[in-house]
Length: 167
Image (cartoon, rainbow, N blue to C red):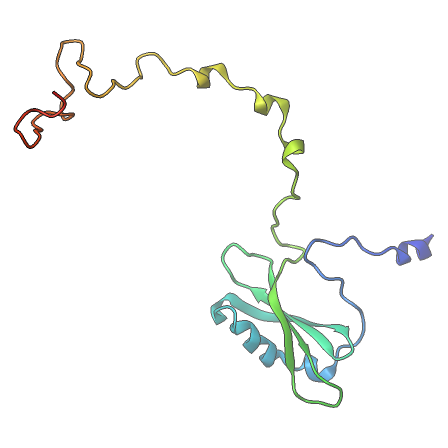
């Protein structure tokens, strides 16, 4: 029974790679400064926290993780994937970015519109459809109940001939 549980792959989260186990390349694992400098190329250094880990992705391929200090991204991690050629001491940056961790706040799974709209959401409320009595705005140019035009509408305006506008 335990053998079956050990063979079952863990449930993946969206955007989180499955880490391969193994000993990371010692030279690449020690290249924390190169990884930090690469991440500083895409974000200010104030948004990069301490180095969290160096994880092996395969032969001569290491991912460095740094804490994110971006506002609104608590629990997220900056990453830099480094590699090098066989027998070379030149580090190459393959990929940079920001990944969620176990503690990150993520948006809920997307649900298609047809599934998320309920029948009661489609019904129009009768109170919202009809305007409340007495809240209608008077139409422009129509006199009030006492026979005067609303102030500011056309008072004092004349056209080129000196005649009142709208007359």
